[in-house]
Length: 219
Image (cartoon, rainbow, N blue to C red; front, side, top):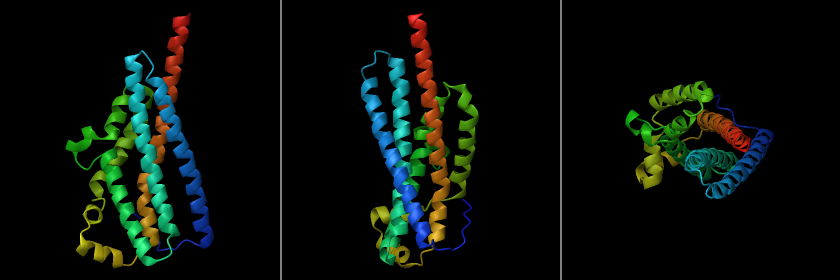
């Protein structure tokens, strides 16, 4: 993954602006998650098994995208708000774990693992709605390029998760480049944001399809 950064520290105002944007995003997405699961409770009462299967997939994939997106925003906000080196190094490590795990669950790092990912489930779901094929294909290309161009900090992820003291000592004490850390989050943030918009559009198509069917039955 080619990441371009300018070694710039954010100004106090830029930091405040990012934190305000992060707060708005977190609030919006957390409300969305709650709303989706209220819908899920109602769907469980439906007698249509086909409808329930489609909506269950929509809810699962949408919830994964929302949690991953929000968690990345939260950790990035905390990293930018941290006031001492150890705290920033700790949060940088946890952010790399999150980026690694989120990408693994979303798309995976090998062809063999793809069938067990959320993107594979999204592709299966979107196949029922051909109008979204082109958009899904664009995401597929972008994700594939990311998967083969970057290790996604596997060593750092393993050290953080399994508390490998030798690696942690090195990573916790090395110089922190704020610009680099933030820029490394952007590709996945952009992907999750785009996927969230796609899921919203698919959900609207499902709702319209159901409305048409109900009107036909009434007619």
